[in-house]
Image (cartoon, rainbow, N blue to C red; front, side, top):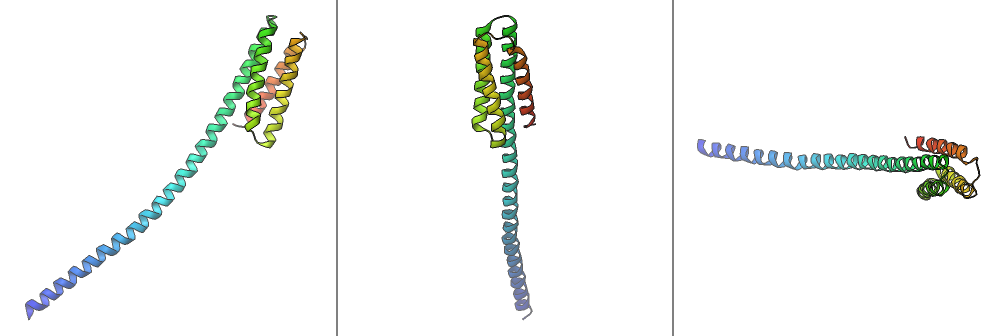
Length: 151
């Protein structure tokens, strides 16, 4: 009889160990699943933040390209090279126009205003009007102000 109780106690301990292992394994999967879901949420948030930052960087780069084109246009005007100045103003206007198409409503108005001003200046360069260079400086400052919105 003593062997029977020992065997029964051993089988009970084995069953208890099996159940404990099963329970721990089952509940750990819940913890792992919850942890994975939280990691996925964090990853989605960080990816969205990176995407927003990349869009802002591209917008600032495009504005910088437009500002550089205006600088080249001013240099061309100083050298009395009206054809190159007109082309550089056109390049700047295209860059601003591309930004205006993708911009939010509040920024779109400012960008459209700058683009319209550039087109007017382009017409003045064609007509060889002298006040264009100072107006180009003012437009470059407006572009800088717009670029600060995405900093």
